[in-house]
Image (tube, rainbow, N blue to C red):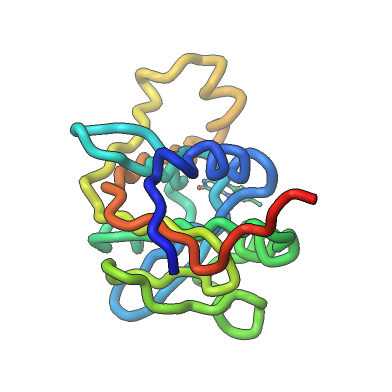
Length: 173
Ligand SMILES: Cc1cc2nc3c(=O)[nH]c(=O)nc-3n(C[C@H](O)[C@H](O)[C@H](O)COP(=O)(O)O)c2cc1C
């Protein structure tokens, strides 16, 4: 395990978010769940490094994050397309995505939400709060394109408390 400043890996996380996604893991009442996240990312808020996770109302994760005090983001640096597809298309309401699907829940260092053990890079976040996008303040263009059914995103604001590699990234050939 090697701690790394979040600023050193923010560009990697941004790139992975937009090319297949990353794993967002949460835990409430002892039932961990994982979903694929493609939006949001690392930024600075309240004078601390922060991860913004936009999660739609309809996700099982949404209800968990409303109650949970923390979440983690695990970033695969090798090909995990099948797992990202599964975590991004099946709901934790219907299946346990940590059961025989190629994703293993491992304890985080500091927060009460697991990491995805198969990933190389991890970010642990403590919840600072959340805000639901308001349909009345979004442009008609955005509402029509992204929210035709009103399934809005809530932005979950996580203070980055740990950022580390569990496996060193492979050097480029
Ligand atoms: C590549 C990819 C990116 C995704 N990004 C997001 C996202 O940023 N926010 C979101 O709410 N759902 C996103 N999803 C959809 C959720 O991952 C998906 O609905 C998932 O099944 C929710 O799981 P849950 O019901 O167990 O929470 C994405 C799906 C994929 C495949």
